[in-house]
Length: 159
Image 1 (tube, rainbow, N blue to C red):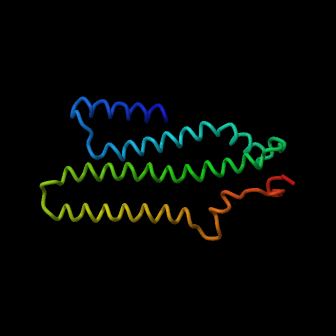
Image 2 (spheres, one colour):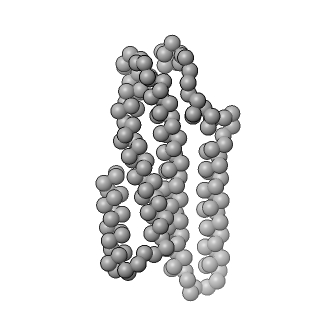
Image 3 (spheres, helix red, strand yellow):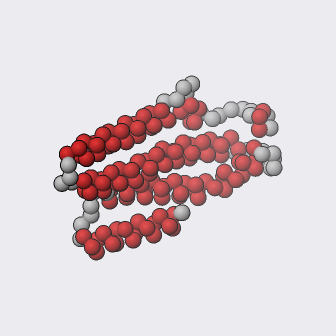
């Protein structure tokens, strides 16, 4: 996925640079989306051995080792950050498409501009709502993400 995304990003930048000699407005959100996707992929690649090791312990296929709780904390933190990066990636692509649509409707009837602004307001409001809902859940899930410490986890056979 990293190679495919990077290939398309390099091709896009190269073609835009050759064809236009300048970058258009949708290039910045696409670049942000690519950076977020790269960060997600890199963090999963970096933590994959830890995820496999901890999953084997929690599935009962391997005996618990000394740092299994520490590894579980790391996995929680990586997944927490990756969800936020995934949202940023999605909204980067949405905003890039909206900017491209704006260029298409310039010079058209005024109603299209009004509809475009309504869609922009909806996209921004939904982005804010999703990130806020993720960061402020009921019963302190955010706190649980960063305080996984426990002396035993009977459900996983760690006592």
